[in-house]
Image (cartoon, rainbow, N blue to C red):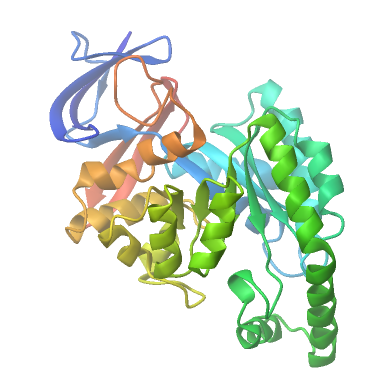
Length: 373
């Protein structure tokens, strides 16, 4: 048995000074006779659960024209997650090209193989699940989904449509044009890309949507919508049994999701940066209205811890409730009832945190009682 002493235990509804004992990878008791790990008055929180991270994509393509070896990229991504206090990570892999040169498709193909190879070896620090992001206008998406969906690591599927000028994050076609110009795409090539993506939307969105929903329902895999704009978007999703609104881009959509009993996920970087990088709703507004169930790292693993301490420092939420957005709330959405809280019998996924001049810093991380960072 290991006892963590001199801790500020962040429980679901309070912060309590004390100690916690761990045995066989589980929280055994509050209190304990040993003094195996002195936390020196730091916070002890549950391991963070990240339902959506694109961080692996950033490691596989650190620069536009520089692709990194996939297995090395996965190990780097894993280490960054562990260092950020994330003990459970849902690798969000895109299925289907949306005009970015097939790079995302390659990331999926490589990561799917690499995860299956590395998991049995015990080479990964955090526990990894798969979040399959299905791009509905992509003709190749159904085949990619069929190859992956029966893997037992697939725990979440989201429906996306990033067709420029039509739906999703790029509904504003001029914003999309400017983003691609900044990436160096020539105007003539850009016109071709937009026309092709819009044609694919009209040809494939409907049948692909029906296919994904049917396949997920058959296996009991939770479904999320992505980038909902309007109440009509939310109504359609709810009627088709989609229970999660991921990254709603308007306050109206988030309110509609809550009214229909859907769970909502938003990006932690939005809070850290003080707003959306793409002109969408401020996540702080969702939190103030009680419309949010979980935060995800989106593209910066360290953002999750910083965001929740920001919420507490600004007195928008008490710290236990803020921590719940990256622990218990995420666990509930994913159906992971063995983690996400400091409670006897749950997994000893633990993070030691100290605040330096307002900034939370991860000092140590344990997964099932074993130190990983």
